[in-house]
Image (cartoon, rainbow over all chains, first blue to last red):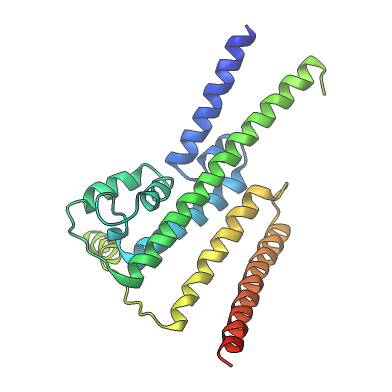
Length: 140
Length: 83
């Protein structure tokens, strides 16, 4: 019984993490942290869009000269980035120089910030579950 | 509707013109603001407008102050080396 509960808890944490990855802030929204969710969604969305505005969607470059870790950071925004990467893979949106660098910095920083929020949402979900179980069993 | 869609698409497929000038570094500021706001959104125990804005602004000012001190220190070092 305890094993089943533990498995459910792990699945729930995974679900919170995945939801936070698909839509920035959705993990917190699921945990009824609506204000945090809105702030995270707006801030990360704006940062990502600013990066695309500065450098165009060409800054998402999965197959070109961009280092792999930049693309890895960018894809932490949402799986939608992979779709944009698929569009730009043919090389139809070339971007060079500072617009490229600043755009990459913005989009990859937005991705890393979303990673921070995903980890925070998982941590919050875990802490709440632990506290609920602790108070139900009389532990501290 | 189509005109709006075309405008939005055009915004995101044309890069901005940004040269390698000193004032281009000001693009750093909105990014710092985003970092400060997101970090504080994960750290503040209870979010109320006053506390959240104050905490975020304090973090933003701290980061900018640290960067400014680092710039001035490096500038002074270069100046001393070139004496």
